[in-house]
Each structure stands twice: as C-alpha cells, then as structure tokens.
Length: 283
Image 1 (cartoon, one colour):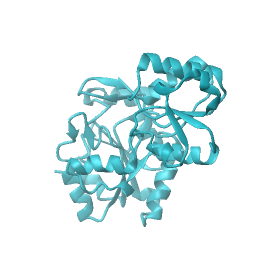
Image 2: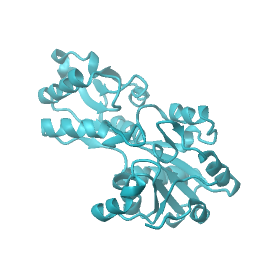
Image 3: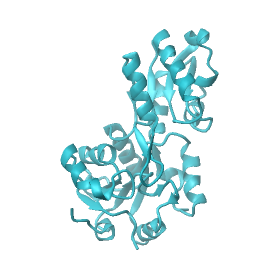
C-alpha cells in the first residue's frame, strides 16, 4: 500500500484532530519527532486538538503529562476526552446517591467535579448496594481485577442502575508488539455477563466527534468539516468515527495498526481512511 507524507497533506486543513496513544505518544513517551509537527502547525496557523478515549485523568492532568514531556503546546483546552461526555451525562441524569467506579483516584475527577459522592468498587460493601445510583467504568487500573470485577457483576445483578463506560477502547499497545485489555474490553465482558445495556462514550460514537467539533468551533475554529482532518492509529475507532462524521481521515502506522497488517485490516474491516501515513511526524 502506498504511503502518503503527513507533511504533504496537513497544510491543506485548518484544524487537526489527533488521537493520543499511538499518534502523539506510545509506551516510551512522545513519538520521536512529534514536537516538530506542532511547531509546523503553529507556524502555519493550523489549529489542533487531542481527541482521546482516555478518562484516566482530567483534562488538566492529561495536558500536564504532555507538557512534562516537552509538548508545551498542549494545554487543557486542547484536550477533549470521553470522560468529559460521561461527566455531562452524570450531570443530567444522576442527581443524588453514590456513584461507584472502577478506576484510579485520579480518574474519579470527572465525577467529583459534579459534587456527587463517589466510592471505589474496591471499597464497596455489597450489603450497601441499594445506596448506589450509578456505576462508571473509568480506567483499567486502581482495583483488583478478579475481586472487584466480580463485585461489579454482583452489584449489577443486585440493583438496576445506569452503567457508564467512559472509555470504549478494548485494548491499547504496551510495547511495539503487545497490547493490554482496556476499559472498554472489561466493560464488554461485564455487560455480556449481566445482560444489561451499558451507556458508552468515546470514539467511534458520533457524540464524541460532535462534542469535539462544537468545542473547536466555539474557540474560533473552522465550521467547515472539509477543513478538519482526523488522525488516528485505529480503524475501528478513530477512522470509522471520523469517516461517519464526514471528516477526512489519516491512519498512521505508529500505534495499533502495524505496517505489515494495514492492507489486510482495511480489506477485512472495510474501513477506508482518506490517507495512510507512516506517522504524524513532520521532519
């Protein structure tokens, strides 16, 4: 499959939506050379945002992780995460009671900013299940997988409450050749066991792209979708989500999609990006 140079296409757009993991960073840190990309974008007055399914931390903390790595251009207003949509849902639909969550103390930021009482699934006593008004899957860390996932299953068997999944990713790369189960994968398993429908936020759902689009337009960005480019490393989230929203898309081979598999994956999944690039790096 013929690859396109990212530098040759990016200048034709006014706003770039970047996925995070596999596009801007990986298990080692920032993708080498990605700082040059943001210098180029700034020099050419091209706007940009990070559109991520990562709900493990709030926007400020996510932005700080980029800044600590040297990518100072990423500020909290440049972060659009699935956790922000989950927070909006809880704000509208859960007015009282206690929200149980699976995740770290950092990930519960999205709930606590609403003033809702929270409890980690690890600390929950199932005898108090009637006090729980919702369950939220926030992160794949911060709890014991065996004990606490079982507890989540039994909570949902005991009470009829909304269950929110703030990260739809099923897996993520941890090395160049290995992946780990992500929050979406855990939630899929629990949903299948309890036979209840969960409420999901994140790519590839249209809500994520509508939210990102409105966020960028409110900050002076282009309202013409033809001038917005979505850059991601996964066909089934970044690319199909961007395609369905009417955006041009770039599949990069620096994350989930390996160079030797790209043509086969496109043919099998039937998801066709506008461009395929080795990476989002501009040298």
